[in-house]
Length: 310
Length: 283
Image (cartoon, rainbow over all chains, first blue to last red; front, side, top):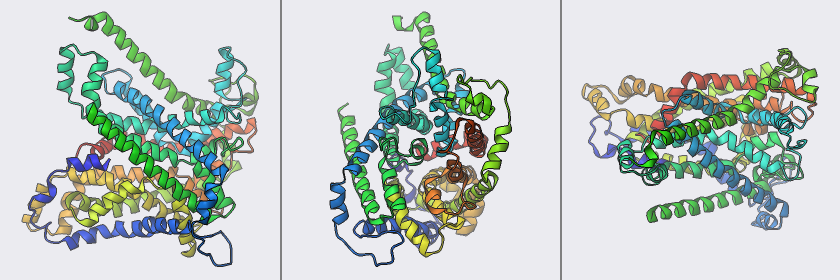
Protein backbone atom coordinates (compact mmCIF):
# COMPACT_ATOMS: atom_id res chain seq x y z
CA UNK A 1 0.00 0.00 0.00
CA UNK A 2 2.83 2.29 0.67
CA UNK A 3 3.84 1.60 -2.84
CA UNK A 4 0.62 3.22 -3.93
CA UNK A 5 1.17 6.13 -1.60
CA UNK A 6 4.80 6.58 -2.57
CA UNK A 7 4.11 6.65 -6.25
CA UNK A 8 1.79 9.60 -5.83
CA UNK A 9 3.86 11.63 -3.47
CA UNK A 10 4.10 15.12 -4.83
CA UNK A 11 7.58 16.35 -5.50
CA UNK A 12 7.76 17.43 -1.89
CA UNK A 13 11.44 16.90 -1.30
CA UNK A 14 12.61 18.63 -4.41
CA UNK A 15 10.97 21.96 -3.82
CA UNK A 16 13.05 24.41 -1.82
CA UNK A 17 11.28 25.27 1.37
CA UNK A 18 12.53 28.06 3.51
CA UNK A 19 12.39 27.45 7.22
CA UNK A 20 11.47 23.81 7.08
CA UNK A 21 14.55 22.85 5.22
CA UNK A 22 16.93 24.31 7.77
CA UNK A 23 17.86 21.12 9.52
CA UNK A 24 17.54 17.43 9.23
CA UNK A 25 18.28 17.39 12.93
CA UNK A 26 14.90 18.94 13.59
CA UNK A 27 13.28 16.18 11.60
CA UNK A 28 15.05 13.53 13.64
CA UNK A 29 13.84 15.21 16.78
CA UNK A 30 10.24 14.98 15.61
CA UNK A 31 10.62 11.35 14.62
CA UNK A 32 12.18 10.32 17.93
CA UNK A 33 8.97 9.91 20.00
CA UNK A 34 7.70 7.32 17.55
CA UNK A 35 11.04 5.78 16.80
CA UNK A 36 11.98 4.94 20.39
CA UNK A 37 8.88 2.91 21.28
CA UNK A 38 8.99 1.20 17.88
CA UNK A 39 12.61 0.25 18.44
CA UNK A 40 12.08 -0.82 22.05
CA UNK A 41 8.79 -2.63 21.72
CA UNK A 42 8.68 -3.77 18.12
CA UNK A 43 12.06 -4.07 16.43
CA UNK A 44 13.85 -5.10 19.61
CA UNK A 45 11.42 -7.80 20.73
CA UNK A 46 11.29 -9.11 17.22
CA UNK A 47 15.03 -9.63 17.05
CA UNK A 48 14.90 -11.00 20.59
CA UNK A 49 12.19 -13.39 19.42
CA UNK A 50 14.31 -14.64 16.56
CA UNK A 51 17.20 -15.22 18.98
CA UNK A 52 14.90 -17.06 21.41
CA UNK A 53 14.14 -19.56 18.66
CA UNK A 54 17.72 -20.79 19.01
CA UNK A 55 17.50 -21.28 22.78
CA UNK A 56 15.76 -23.66 25.15
CA UNK A 57 13.94 -20.81 26.90
CA UNK A 58 11.02 -21.94 29.05
CA UNK A 59 8.68 -20.03 31.30
CA UNK A 60 9.25 -20.10 35.04
CA UNK A 61 12.46 -22.08 34.90
CA UNK A 62 15.30 -21.20 37.25
CA UNK A 63 18.18 -22.71 35.28
CA UNK A 64 19.87 -20.39 32.80
CA UNK A 65 18.66 -20.43 29.24
CA UNK A 66 21.15 -22.03 26.87
CA UNK A 67 21.88 -21.80 23.18
CA UNK A 68 20.87 -24.96 21.44
CA UNK A 69 21.49 -23.96 17.86
CA UNK A 70 18.94 -25.19 15.35
CA UNK A 71 17.62 -27.95 17.58
CA UNK A 72 14.18 -26.35 17.84
CA UNK A 73 13.93 -26.21 14.09
CA UNK A 74 15.04 -29.81 13.74
CA UNK A 75 12.35 -30.85 16.23
CA UNK A 76 9.79 -28.77 14.35
CA UNK A 77 10.63 -30.55 11.13
CA UNK A 78 9.48 -33.82 12.67
CA UNK A 79 6.54 -32.35 14.55
CA UNK A 80 3.61 -33.71 12.56
CA UNK A 81 1.11 -31.86 14.76
CA UNK A 82 2.72 -28.57 13.84
CA UNK A 83 2.68 -29.29 10.12
CA UNK A 84 -0.93 -30.37 10.32
CA UNK A 85 -1.70 -27.09 12.03
CA UNK A 86 0.31 -25.33 9.37
CA UNK A 87 -1.70 -26.98 6.62
CA UNK A 88 -4.94 -25.96 8.34
CA UNK A 89 -3.59 -22.42 8.57
CA UNK A 90 -2.97 -22.29 4.82
CA UNK A 91 -6.41 -23.72 4.01
CA UNK A 92 -7.94 -21.15 6.35
CA UNK A 93 -5.97 -18.21 4.96
CA UNK A 94 -6.66 -18.98 1.31
CA UNK A 95 -10.20 -20.15 2.04
CA UNK A 96 -10.97 -16.83 3.70
CA UNK A 97 -8.98 -14.46 1.49
CA UNK A 98 -10.28 -15.57 -1.91
CA UNK A 99 -14.05 -15.49 -1.23
CA UNK A 100 -13.51 -12.35 0.82
CA UNK A 101 -11.98 -10.62 -2.17
CA UNK A 102 -14.62 -11.77 -4.66
CA UNK A 103 -17.53 -10.87 -2.37
CA UNK A 104 -15.97 -7.54 -1.46
CA UNK A 105 -15.38 -6.73 -5.12
CA UNK A 106 -19.01 -7.42 -5.90
CA UNK A 107 -20.22 -5.32 -3.00
CA UNK A 108 -17.84 -2.47 -3.79
CA UNK A 109 -19.03 -2.39 -7.42
CA UNK A 110 -22.63 -2.30 -6.23
CA UNK A 111 -21.97 0.41 -3.66
CA UNK A 112 -20.18 2.46 -6.28
CA UNK A 113 -23.41 2.72 -8.25
CA UNK A 114 -26.36 4.93 -7.78
CA UNK A 115 -28.65 2.49 -6.03
CA UNK A 116 -31.20 3.04 -3.31
CA UNK A 117 -30.33 1.40 0.04
CA UNK A 118 -26.74 2.24 -0.69
CA UNK A 119 -26.40 4.28 2.49
CA UNK A 120 -27.80 1.46 4.58
CA UNK A 121 -25.51 -1.05 2.91
CA UNK A 122 -22.48 1.16 3.44
CA UNK A 123 -23.30 1.60 7.11
CA UNK A 124 -23.99 -2.08 7.53
CA UNK A 125 -20.78 -3.02 5.77
CA UNK A 126 -18.86 -1.08 8.40
CA UNK A 127 -20.46 -2.81 11.39
CA UNK A 128 -18.49 -6.08 11.39
CA UNK A 129 -15.36 -3.97 11.29
CA UNK A 130 -16.29 -2.12 14.44
CA UNK A 131 -17.07 -5.28 16.37
CA UNK A 132 -14.49 -6.86 18.66
CA UNK A 133 -13.38 -10.19 17.23
CA UNK A 134 -14.46 -11.86 20.44
CA UNK A 135 -17.98 -10.57 19.94
CA UNK A 136 -18.02 -11.72 16.33
CA UNK A 137 -17.01 -15.15 17.58
CA UNK A 138 -19.70 -15.21 20.26
CA UNK A 139 -22.31 -14.02 17.79
CA UNK A 140 -21.57 -16.79 15.33
CA UNK A 141 -21.53 -19.34 18.12
CA UNK A 142 -25.13 -18.30 18.66
CA UNK A 143 -25.88 -18.68 14.95
CA UNK A 144 -24.26 -22.12 14.82
CA UNK A 145 -25.67 -23.29 18.15
CA UNK A 146 -27.18 -26.73 17.53
CA UNK A 147 -30.28 -26.10 19.64
CA UNK A 148 -30.93 -22.39 19.87
CA UNK A 149 -29.11 -21.39 16.65
CA UNK A 150 -30.78 -19.81 13.68
CA UNK A 151 -28.90 -21.88 11.12
CA UNK A 152 -30.28 -25.25 12.17
CA UNK A 153 -33.73 -23.77 12.66
CA UNK A 154 -33.71 -22.36 9.12
CA UNK A 155 -32.52 -25.68 7.71
CA UNK A 156 -35.31 -27.45 9.57
CA UNK A 157 -37.85 -24.97 8.23
CA UNK A 158 -36.62 -25.54 4.70
CA UNK A 159 -36.83 -29.28 5.21
CA UNK A 160 -33.11 -29.74 4.73
CA UNK A 161 -32.56 -32.25 7.48
CA UNK A 162 -32.24 -31.93 11.19
CA UNK A 163 -29.20 -29.71 11.29
CA UNK A 164 -26.03 -30.52 13.13
CA UNK A 165 -23.47 -29.28 15.59
CA UNK A 166 -21.46 -27.26 13.11
CA UNK A 167 -18.55 -26.23 15.29
CA UNK A 168 -18.00 -29.67 16.82
CA UNK A 169 -18.31 -31.75 13.66
CA UNK A 170 -14.98 -32.95 12.33
CA UNK A 171 -16.00 -32.20 8.75
CA UNK A 172 -17.94 -28.98 9.31
CA UNK A 173 -15.82 -27.11 11.84
CA UNK A 174 -13.23 -25.67 9.47
CA UNK A 175 -15.70 -24.57 6.75
CA UNK A 176 -17.94 -23.07 9.45
CA UNK A 177 -15.02 -21.11 10.87
CA UNK A 178 -13.93 -19.97 7.41
CA UNK A 179 -17.41 -18.60 6.72
CA UNK A 180 -17.10 -16.45 9.83
CA UNK A 181 -13.68 -15.26 8.70
CA UNK A 182 -15.11 -14.16 5.37
CA UNK A 183 -17.95 -12.30 7.08
CA UNK A 184 -15.65 -10.54 9.52
CA UNK A 185 -13.12 -9.36 6.92
CA UNK A 186 -15.59 -8.29 4.26
CA UNK A 187 -15.94 -4.64 5.36
CA UNK A 188 -12.27 -3.75 5.34
CA UNK A 189 -11.74 -5.25 1.92
CA UNK A 190 -14.88 -3.57 0.57
CA UNK A 191 -13.87 -0.16 1.86
CA UNK A 192 -10.39 -0.52 0.36
CA UNK A 193 -11.78 -1.59 -3.01
CA UNK A 194 -14.39 1.16 -2.91
CA UNK A 195 -11.55 3.61 -2.40
CA UNK A 196 -9.73 2.08 -5.34
CA UNK A 197 -12.82 2.44 -7.51
CA UNK A 198 -12.67 6.20 -7.08
CA UNK A 199 -9.55 6.05 -9.25
CA UNK A 200 -11.42 4.62 -12.20
CA UNK A 201 -11.76 7.31 -14.84
CA UNK A 202 -15.49 7.84 -15.32
CA UNK A 203 -15.17 9.36 -18.79
CA UNK A 204 -13.36 6.30 -20.02
CA UNK A 205 -16.19 4.16 -18.69
CA UNK A 206 -18.77 6.23 -20.51
CA UNK A 207 -16.77 6.25 -23.71
CA UNK A 208 -16.48 2.47 -23.59
CA UNK A 209 -20.22 2.18 -23.00
CA UNK A 210 -20.96 4.41 -25.97
CA UNK A 211 -18.68 2.25 -28.08
CA UNK A 212 -20.88 -0.68 -27.12
CA UNK A 213 -18.62 -2.47 -24.69
CA UNK A 214 -20.60 -4.78 -22.41
CA UNK A 215 -20.37 -4.66 -18.64
CA UNK A 216 -17.80 -7.42 -18.40
CA UNK A 217 -15.64 -5.91 -21.13
CA UNK A 218 -15.79 -2.50 -19.45
CA UNK A 219 -14.84 -4.04 -16.13
CA UNK A 220 -11.86 -5.84 -17.64
CA UNK A 221 -10.47 -3.03 -19.74
CA UNK A 222 -11.36 0.08 -17.74
CA UNK A 223 -12.16 -0.76 -14.12
CA UNK A 224 -9.68 -3.52 -13.38
CA UNK A 225 -6.49 -1.80 -14.58
CA UNK A 226 -7.25 1.17 -12.34
CA UNK A 227 -8.27 -1.01 -9.41
CA UNK A 228 -5.43 -3.50 -9.62
CA UNK A 229 -2.87 -1.84 -7.33
CA UNK A 230 -5.39 -1.52 -4.50
CA UNK A 231 -6.75 -5.01 -5.10
CA UNK A 232 -3.26 -6.43 -4.98
CA UNK A 233 -2.33 -4.60 -1.80
CA UNK A 234 -5.48 -5.49 0.11
CA UNK A 235 -5.31 -9.14 -0.93
CA UNK A 236 -1.71 -9.41 0.19
CA UNK A 237 -2.57 -7.78 3.51
CA UNK A 238 -5.63 -9.99 3.96
CA UNK A 239 -3.54 -13.07 3.38
CA UNK A 240 -1.09 -11.99 6.06
CA UNK A 241 -3.78 -10.93 8.52
CA UNK A 242 -5.64 -14.18 8.05
CA UNK A 243 -2.52 -16.27 8.57
CA UNK A 244 -1.97 -14.38 11.82
CA UNK A 245 -5.51 -14.51 13.06
CA UNK A 246 -6.20 -15.82 16.51
CA UNK A 247 -9.16 -14.43 18.46
CA UNK A 248 -11.94 -15.49 16.12
CA UNK A 249 -11.07 -19.16 16.07
CA UNK A 250 -10.04 -19.14 19.74
CA UNK A 251 -13.57 -18.07 20.62
CA UNK A 252 -15.39 -20.19 18.05
CA UNK A 253 -13.75 -23.58 18.57
CA UNK A 254 -10.62 -23.14 20.65
CA UNK A 255 -8.86 -25.12 17.93
CA UNK A 256 -11.11 -28.13 18.23
CA UNK A 257 -12.60 -30.56 17.44
CA UNK A 258 -9.56 -32.78 17.55
CA UNK A 259 -7.31 -29.97 16.33
CA UNK A 260 -9.29 -29.58 13.08
CA UNK A 261 -9.29 -25.81 13.39
CA UNK A 262 -6.05 -25.36 15.30
CA UNK A 263 -4.46 -22.52 13.33
CA UNK A 264 -0.69 -22.07 13.69
CA UNK A 265 -1.24 -19.08 15.96
CA UNK A 266 -3.33 -21.12 18.37
CA UNK A 267 -0.78 -23.89 18.28
CA UNK A 268 2.09 -21.53 19.08
CA UNK A 269 0.05 -19.80 21.78
CA UNK A 270 -0.60 -23.09 23.54
CA UNK A 271 3.02 -24.11 23.18
CA UNK A 272 4.22 -20.84 24.71
CA UNK A 273 1.67 -19.99 27.36
CA UNK A 274 0.16 -23.32 28.29
CA UNK A 275 3.27 -25.49 28.13
CA UNK A 276 5.79 -22.69 28.63
CA UNK A 277 8.00 -23.69 25.69
CA UNK A 278 9.09 -20.19 24.74
CA UNK A 279 12.03 -21.20 22.56
CA UNK A 280 10.06 -23.77 20.62
CA UNK A 281 7.12 -21.43 20.09
CA UNK A 282 9.48 -18.70 18.88
CA UNK A 283 10.87 -21.15 16.34
CA UNK A 284 7.31 -21.70 15.09
CA UNK A 285 6.95 -17.94 14.76
CA UNK A 286 10.13 -17.81 12.68
CA UNK A 287 8.88 -20.53 10.36
CA UNK A 288 5.63 -18.62 9.96
CA UNK A 289 7.44 -15.39 9.10
CA UNK A 290 9.56 -17.20 6.54
CA UNK A 291 6.55 -18.78 4.90
CA UNK A 292 4.59 -15.53 4.89
CA UNK A 293 7.47 -13.71 3.23
CA UNK A 294 7.95 -16.38 0.57
CA UNK A 295 4.22 -16.55 -0.14
CA UNK A 296 3.97 -12.83 -0.34
CA UNK A 297 6.96 -12.46 -2.64
CA UNK A 298 5.64 -15.20 -4.90
CA UNK A 299 2.16 -13.69 -4.92
CA UNK A 300 3.32 -10.17 -5.68
CA UNK A 301 5.86 -11.25 -8.29
CA UNK A 302 3.27 -13.44 -9.99
CA UNK A 303 0.59 -10.76 -9.99
CA UNK A 304 2.90 -8.06 -11.21
CA UNK A 305 4.09 -10.19 -14.09
CA UNK A 306 0.52 -11.21 -14.89
CA UNK A 307 -0.35 -7.55 -15.12
CA UNK A 308 2.24 -6.84 -17.77
CA UNK A 309 0.94 -9.58 -20.00
CA UNK A 310 -2.64 -8.43 -19.83
CA UNK B 1 -28.79 0.84 -30.41
CA UNK B 2 -27.54 -2.51 -29.37
CA UNK B 3 -29.68 -5.11 -27.74
CA UNK B 4 -27.77 -4.71 -24.51
CA UNK B 5 -29.05 -1.19 -24.05
CA UNK B 6 -32.78 -1.57 -24.55
CA UNK B 7 -34.81 -0.28 -21.59
CA UNK B 8 -36.09 -3.74 -20.83
CA UNK B 9 -32.72 -5.39 -20.35
CA UNK B 10 -31.57 -2.36 -18.49
CA UNK B 11 -34.46 -2.75 -16.10
CA UNK B 12 -33.60 -6.40 -15.70
CA UNK B 13 -30.00 -5.50 -14.94
CA UNK B 14 -31.19 -3.03 -12.35
CA UNK B 15 -33.40 -5.62 -10.72
CA UNK B 16 -30.45 -7.99 -10.68
CA UNK B 17 -28.33 -5.40 -8.94
CA UNK B 18 -30.95 -4.82 -6.27
CA UNK B 19 -31.29 -8.54 -5.71
CA UNK B 20 -27.55 -8.81 -5.25
CA UNK B 21 -27.51 -5.85 -2.87
CA UNK B 22 -30.32 -7.35 -0.83
CA UNK B 23 -28.46 -10.64 -0.63
CA UNK B 24 -25.43 -8.78 0.72
CA UNK B 25 -27.58 -6.91 3.23
CA UNK B 26 -29.05 -10.18 4.41
CA UNK B 27 -25.68 -11.86 4.74
CA UNK B 28 -24.23 -8.92 6.66
CA UNK B 29 -27.22 -8.32 8.90
CA UNK B 30 -28.55 -11.73 9.88
CA UNK B 31 -25.93 -12.63 12.52
CA UNK B 32 -26.33 -9.18 14.07
CA UNK B 33 -30.10 -9.48 14.24
CA UNK B 34 -29.79 -12.96 15.71
CA UNK B 35 -27.45 -11.67 18.39
CA UNK B 36 -29.98 -8.99 19.29
CA UNK B 37 -32.83 -11.47 19.22
CA UNK B 38 -31.00 -13.91 21.49
CA UNK B 39 -30.10 -11.12 23.88
CA UNK B 40 -33.78 -10.31 24.37
CA UNK B 41 -35.05 -13.84 24.92
CA UNK B 42 -36.01 -15.34 28.26
CA UNK B 43 -34.27 -18.54 29.38
CA UNK B 44 -37.48 -20.43 28.79
CA UNK B 45 -37.76 -19.29 25.23
CA UNK B 46 -34.11 -20.07 24.60
CA UNK B 47 -34.81 -23.63 25.72
CA UNK B 48 -37.69 -24.07 23.29
CA UNK B 49 -36.99 -26.44 20.40
CA UNK B 50 -37.96 -23.87 17.76
CA UNK B 51 -36.10 -20.63 18.28
CA UNK B 52 -37.91 -17.68 16.71
CA UNK B 53 -36.50 -14.54 15.12
CA UNK B 54 -38.68 -12.25 17.16
CA UNK B 55 -38.69 -12.95 20.90
CA UNK B 56 -42.20 -13.69 22.11
CA UNK B 57 -41.62 -11.99 25.45
CA UNK B 58 -38.70 -9.62 25.02
CA UNK B 59 -36.87 -9.09 28.30
CA UNK B 60 -33.92 -7.14 29.58
CA UNK B 61 -33.32 -9.67 32.34
CA UNK B 62 -30.31 -10.99 30.43
CA UNK B 63 -28.52 -7.68 30.74
CA UNK B 64 -29.02 -7.68 34.47
CA UNK B 65 -27.89 -11.27 34.79
CA UNK B 66 -24.82 -10.65 32.63
CA UNK B 67 -23.73 -7.85 34.91
CA UNK B 68 -24.41 -9.97 37.98
CA UNK B 69 -22.47 -12.98 36.75
CA UNK B 70 -19.24 -11.39 35.67
CA UNK B 71 -17.49 -8.15 36.56
CA UNK B 72 -18.59 -6.66 33.27
CA UNK B 73 -18.91 -3.04 34.32
CA UNK B 74 -15.46 -3.09 35.80
CA UNK B 75 -14.03 -4.77 32.71
CA UNK B 76 -15.68 -2.13 30.54
CA UNK B 77 -14.06 0.58 32.62
CA UNK B 78 -10.66 -1.13 32.22
CA UNK B 79 -11.18 -1.31 28.48
CA UNK B 80 -12.25 2.31 28.28
CA UNK B 81 -9.21 3.58 30.16
CA UNK B 82 -6.81 1.47 28.13
CA UNK B 83 -8.42 2.50 24.85
CA UNK B 84 -8.49 6.21 25.69
CA UNK B 85 -4.86 6.17 26.80
CA UNK B 86 -3.86 4.29 23.67
CA UNK B 87 -5.64 6.76 21.42
CA UNK B 88 -4.12 9.79 23.15
CA UNK B 89 -0.56 8.49 23.22
CA UNK B 90 -0.70 7.16 19.68
CA UNK B 91 -1.82 10.48 18.27
CA UNK B 92 0.72 12.44 20.31
CA UNK B 93 3.56 10.27 19.10
CA UNK B 94 2.44 9.64 15.56
CA UNK B 95 1.55 13.14 14.45
CA UNK B 96 5.05 14.65 14.40
CA UNK B 97 6.54 11.53 12.85
CA UNK B 98 3.88 11.25 10.18
CA UNK B 99 4.47 14.88 9.38
CA UNK B 100 8.17 14.27 8.88
CA UNK B 101 7.43 11.19 6.81
CA UNK B 102 5.24 13.27 4.55
CA UNK B 103 7.50 16.29 4.24
CA UNK B 104 11.07 15.03 4.42
CA UNK B 105 12.80 12.29 2.63
CA UNK B 106 15.18 11.63 5.48
CA UNK B 107 16.52 8.22 6.27
CA UNK B 108 14.41 8.14 9.43
CA UNK B 109 11.26 8.77 7.46
CA UNK B 110 12.12 6.12 4.93
CA UNK B 111 12.96 3.63 7.68
CA UNK B 112 9.63 4.35 9.35
CA UNK B 113 7.78 3.81 6.08
CA UNK B 114 9.60 0.53 5.53
CA UNK B 115 8.80 -0.60 9.03
CA UNK B 116 5.13 0.15 8.52
CA UNK B 117 5.08 -2.40 5.73
CA UNK B 118 7.36 -4.99 7.27
CA UNK B 119 5.65 -4.95 10.67
CA UNK B 120 2.41 -6.11 9.08
CA UNK B 121 3.93 -9.44 8.20
CA UNK B 122 5.01 -10.58 11.68
CA UNK B 123 3.05 -13.18 13.52
CA UNK B 124 2.12 -11.99 16.98
CA UNK B 125 3.62 -15.10 18.56
CA UNK B 126 7.05 -14.00 17.57
CA UNK B 127 6.34 -10.63 19.15
CA UNK B 128 4.41 -11.64 22.23
CA UNK B 129 6.96 -13.99 23.78
CA UNK B 130 9.81 -11.48 23.89
CA UNK B 131 7.35 -8.71 24.82
CA UNK B 132 6.14 -10.85 27.67
CA UNK B 133 9.71 -11.37 28.88
CA UNK B 134 10.63 -7.69 28.48
CA UNK B 135 7.49 -6.43 30.22
CA UNK B 136 8.01 -8.97 32.97
CA UNK B 137 11.45 -7.58 33.63
CA UNK B 138 9.98 -4.06 33.69
CA UNK B 139 7.26 -5.32 36.08
CA UNK B 140 4.62 -4.27 33.55
CA UNK B 141 2.91 -7.64 33.25
CA UNK B 142 -0.63 -7.54 34.53
CA UNK B 143 -0.61 -3.77 34.33
CA UNK B 144 -2.71 -1.47 32.14
CA UNK B 145 0.41 0.63 31.45
CA UNK B 146 2.17 -2.32 29.86
CA UNK B 147 -0.85 -3.09 27.74
CA UNK B 148 -1.18 0.52 26.59
CA UNK B 149 2.50 0.52 25.58
CA UNK B 150 1.99 -2.59 23.50
CA UNK B 151 -1.18 -1.21 21.89
CA UNK B 152 0.49 2.07 21.01
CA UNK B 153 3.35 0.33 19.27
CA UNK B 154 0.91 -1.99 17.63
CA UNK B 155 -1.29 0.78 16.20
CA UNK B 156 1.62 3.03 15.27
CA UNK B 157 2.35 1.64 11.79
CA UNK B 158 -1.18 2.11 10.53
CA UNK B 159 -1.57 5.40 12.37
CA UNK B 160 1.61 6.73 10.79
CA UNK B 161 0.54 5.62 7.37
CA UNK B 162 -2.90 7.19 7.73
CA UNK B 163 -1.59 10.45 9.15
CA UNK B 164 1.20 10.75 6.60
CA UNK B 165 -1.42 10.54 3.87
CA UNK B 166 -3.30 13.40 5.48
CA UNK B 167 -0.15 15.43 6.04
CA UNK B 168 0.73 15.19 2.37
CA UNK B 169 -2.65 16.68 1.57
CA UNK B 170 -1.83 19.82 3.57
CA UNK B 171 -0.34 22.26 1.06
CA UNK B 172 3.30 22.99 1.85
CA UNK B 173 2.79 26.52 0.54
CA UNK B 174 0.81 27.41 3.65
CA UNK B 175 3.73 26.40 5.82
CA UNK B 176 6.15 28.29 3.65
CA UNK B 177 4.00 31.37 4.00
CA UNK B 178 4.03 30.99 7.78
CA UNK B 179 7.80 30.55 7.73
CA UNK B 180 8.21 33.64 5.61
CA UNK B 181 6.09 35.52 8.12
CA UNK B 182 8.63 34.53 10.75
CA UNK B 183 6.90 31.65 12.47
CA UNK B 184 9.30 29.08 13.87
CA UNK B 185 9.04 25.41 13.09
CA UNK B 186 7.05 24.58 16.19
CA UNK B 187 4.77 27.56 15.70
CA UNK B 188 4.14 26.56 12.09
CA UNK B 189 3.29 23.04 13.17
CA UNK B 190 0.93 23.99 15.97
CA UNK B 191 -0.93 26.87 14.39
CA UNK B 192 -0.91 26.06 10.68
CA UNK B 193 -0.45 22.35 10.12
CA UNK B 194 -2.21 20.87 13.14
CA UNK B 195 -5.61 22.50 12.53
CA UNK B 196 -5.59 21.33 8.92
CA UNK B 197 -4.60 17.88 10.07
CA UNK B 198 -7.40 17.72 12.66
CA UNK B 199 -9.73 15.46 10.65
CA UNK B 200 -6.88 13.06 10.03
CA UNK B 201 -5.90 13.14 13.69
CA UNK B 202 -9.49 12.44 14.72
CA UNK B 203 -9.69 9.47 12.37
CA UNK B 204 -6.39 8.15 13.67
CA UNK B 205 -7.40 8.52 17.31
CA UNK B 206 -10.60 6.69 16.51
CA UNK B 207 -8.70 3.92 14.84
CA UNK B 208 -6.38 3.53 17.81
CA UNK B 209 -9.30 3.59 20.25
CA UNK B 210 -11.24 0.90 18.42
CA UNK B 211 -8.15 -1.23 17.97
CA UNK B 212 -7.42 -1.16 21.68
CA UNK B 213 -11.06 -1.59 22.71
CA UNK B 214 -11.44 -4.66 20.50
CA UNK B 215 -8.06 -6.28 21.03
CA UNK B 216 -7.95 -9.70 22.60
CA UNK B 217 -4.69 -11.58 22.11
CA UNK B 218 -2.27 -9.28 23.93
CA UNK B 219 -4.78 -8.68 26.70
CA UNK B 220 -5.23 -12.41 27.13
CA UNK B 221 -1.51 -12.98 27.53
CA UNK B 222 -0.51 -9.87 29.45
CA UNK B 223 -3.33 -9.44 31.98
CA UNK B 224 -3.58 -12.13 34.60
CA UNK B 225 -5.66 -10.91 37.51
CA UNK B 226 -9.42 -10.82 36.83
CA UNK B 227 -9.91 -7.28 38.13
CA UNK B 228 -7.46 -5.91 35.56
CA UNK B 229 -8.82 -7.77 32.55
CA UNK B 230 -10.42 -5.94 29.66
CA UNK B 231 -13.86 -6.60 28.26
CA UNK B 232 -13.01 -9.07 25.47
CA UNK B 233 -11.06 -11.27 27.89
CA UNK B 234 -13.85 -11.22 30.47
CA UNK B 235 -16.37 -12.02 27.75
CA UNK B 236 -14.56 -15.24 26.89
CA UNK B 237 -15.13 -16.38 30.49
CA UNK B 238 -18.80 -16.66 29.53
CA UNK B 239 -17.98 -19.18 26.85
CA UNK B 240 -17.40 -22.83 27.39
CA UNK B 241 -19.61 -23.78 30.29
CA UNK B 242 -22.64 -22.29 28.62
CA UNK B 243 -25.92 -24.09 28.85
CA UNK B 244 -28.68 -22.98 26.52
CA UNK B 245 -30.15 -20.84 29.29
CA UNK B 246 -26.91 -18.86 29.61
CA UNK B 247 -26.94 -17.85 25.97
CA UNK B 248 -29.12 -14.85 26.74
CA UNK B 249 -26.69 -13.13 29.12
CA UNK B 250 -23.82 -14.01 26.78
CA UNK B 251 -25.59 -12.37 23.84
CA UNK B 252 -26.52 -9.34 25.91
CA UNK B 253 -22.96 -8.84 27.13
CA UNK B 254 -21.54 -9.28 23.63
CA UNK B 255 -24.01 -6.78 22.24
CA UNK B 256 -23.16 -4.20 24.89
CA UNK B 257 -19.44 -4.66 24.27
CA UNK B 258 -19.95 -3.62 20.67
CA UNK B 259 -21.83 -0.41 21.40
CA UNK B 260 -18.88 1.92 22.10
CA UNK B 261 -16.97 1.09 18.93
CA UNK B 262 -20.21 1.16 16.97
CA UNK B 263 -21.07 4.56 18.37
CA UNK B 264 -17.64 5.85 17.45
CA UNK B 265 -17.90 4.44 13.96
CA UNK B 266 -21.34 5.88 13.44
CA UNK B 267 -20.14 9.23 14.68
CA UNK B 268 -17.23 9.48 12.30
CA UNK B 269 -18.16 6.91 9.70
CA UNK B 270 -17.99 9.35 6.85
CA UNK B 271 -14.82 10.79 8.21
CA UNK B 272 -13.07 7.50 8.63
CA UNK B 273 -13.93 6.22 5.18
CA UNK B 274 -12.81 9.49 3.67
CA UNK B 275 -9.79 9.43 5.99
CA UNK B 276 -8.89 5.98 4.77
CA UNK B 277 -9.40 7.07 1.21
CA UNK B 278 -7.07 9.98 1.71
CA UNK B 279 -4.49 7.83 3.38
CA UNK B 280 -4.77 5.02 0.91
CA UNK B 281 -4.88 6.28 -2.59
CA UNK B 282 -5.48 9.95 -2.93
CA UNK B 283 -2.61 11.95 -1.75
